[in-house]
Length: 341
Image 1 (cartoon, rainbow, N blue to C red):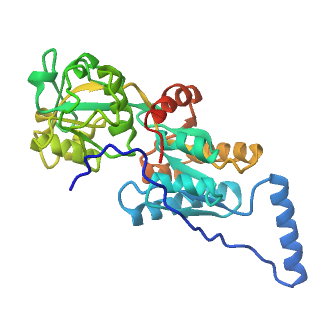
Image 2: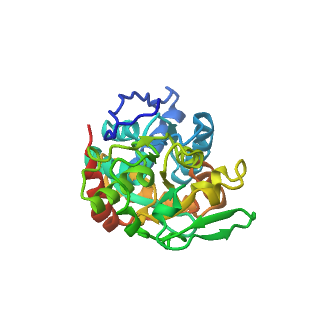
Image 3: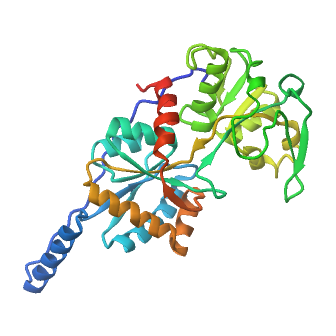
């Protein structure tokens, strides 16, 4: 059964990560080598090892394998071991950062701010996709007669699949179509992605609540969590919901199976631009270490192997310094609308 309760962030699970220690042998040569290594680590300020926390986006085994490749490239760049930890949720990564069990976390924008607020983590980098560090959440419907205030237009992609839009909601920049959102009743059947999704819940729910003047948790009563971006498109395509939310453009995920999905499911509005997911660092690390790690990740992203590893993990096409103003002025207020348990 789908969850029809608009809960705030899920309760964080307790985590335990065993970090292997290093020891030297009694041999004089080995002791001298260990002493030299310790001096090098002390000089660089880096810890003896680091833990990189990743959230599974689909297949746990695959992202663990891909994450280990990324950790290997980063380890080569830094000269110290980097371990990979893949929990079952964003909240688990936040807890790991909070308890000193993770040093680096790859998170979505809401979880990045949550880590900043609850774990004292530093927001340092954002992912680049299609040349941008921002994206939009898209509103779509199977009822364009109600929510399209102008003519529906259709564009074909490189594969010849048609995608339909209205209210200026085409491209990758928002907000668009907000006049149509005023027509959405608070009890509308809306397929939201899940309770931790920035583009599929937090930002569009806040956008709708602002336009309608309602509480995003208690007053939007007709929605349900479909469980994923592809699932929200499927729900609207099948008529289970009149409206759905996803990142732009999740309709393509179903285009191979349903060639008419882009025409039957019409995008009619966009959220404001949302900062991409990115990287946070443990607040327990010294500022100089944080700077070293940030630069190391940027350097890794500038290499062929590093970029391939980032692409394999989260389809990341590059990294850049985080837009702190966007997080403070846009992500933070949205996070506060929902709070945490």
